[in-house]
Image (cartoon, rainbow, N blue to C red; front, top):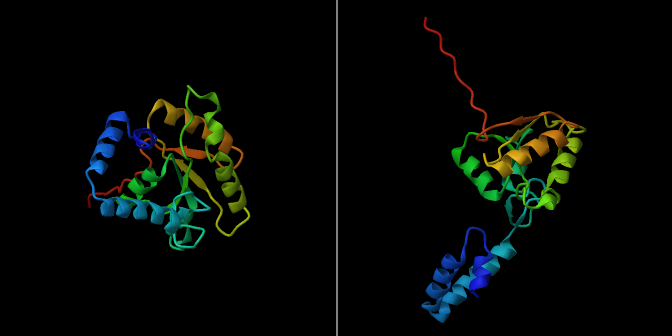
Length: 181
């Protein structure tokens, strides 16, 4: 039981033990509520076919990808869903996203195969034939050795489509220049 919790992201053995002991104190009804919520999560939500973010309902694409007000020419490439949520929370980025599903690990040489790079490449390539082609891919990866390695890999792969722009913290900052009159 504890091993199941420990298999979740960011949950170590101590945290898993705390969760298990906490649940042991709950009534059968409360445990059933937890179980129902977990099952509903799997039934009511799915993964967006375009960007791999969370999508609700029966639609294959998420609200972000379906939003006609979004700038279709810019894709922000992130590591995971929580990165998309954090950028969205700022309300400043108005383009689209692509969630890679991880980064390249020096310890796992084959880790690049698990990333959704092929899907990103195809998405950009396909967009070139559409009304609004992707002109910019912002690499908003975490400033870690793995994030840097992944960004370098993506820059090389995406050269065939368009040059990728690398951003240290994800979003380009524009300065308003004011002149004194």
